[in-house]
Length: 238
Image 1: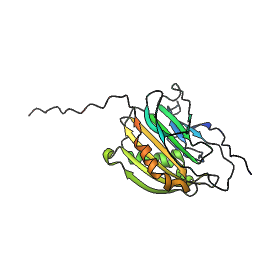
Image 2: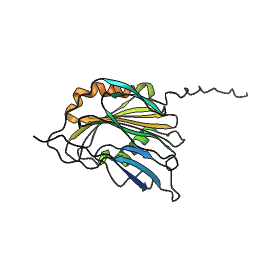
Image 3: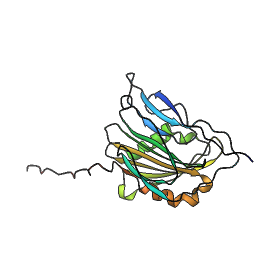
């Protein structure tokens, strides 16, 4: 009987490329951390990319059960995390990447084919368009669109955050041939842009979709930050 599969630890690659174009693609949607522009005008992007894994014949089913509150040690976000999922946090260097706020991944135990990633970055400017920013991330940063079997199932506007938050359901295949099903939340909060993604092997999606949506709804960026002040209109002189 074959022994348990062992997944290698994540490797960190540093890519210096114009704008957000990247020259490599991950086997799973990576944790993306845009960095500070170097002197030559290129944009440095750090990506946590899982090394290629050994081909497998069968996916490992996943069932998301109970979850517990998790608060970022620096207070940058709160979210429910499935019990037993282990965090793999990307070390950040503020001197090298001052715009990166957080990049972390939670992996399902027992080599289950599932993960949750939370990425935040802030360049001091509020994105002018949610849809345009999402398309750029999907096309040029995550590499999802280049994955075998890529299919965007749906886009859902978060009604209470129209123009500032959207969920996108995606299917793709890993290099091992395992089909994955993903729901990602993209959200603007002031100048902070968040991407919160939960992926499970495709055969486990239907049994987990409700829990995936429940967990995404618990995401709160900057929970300690005061709410933005309401704009006050100054009357004009007649």
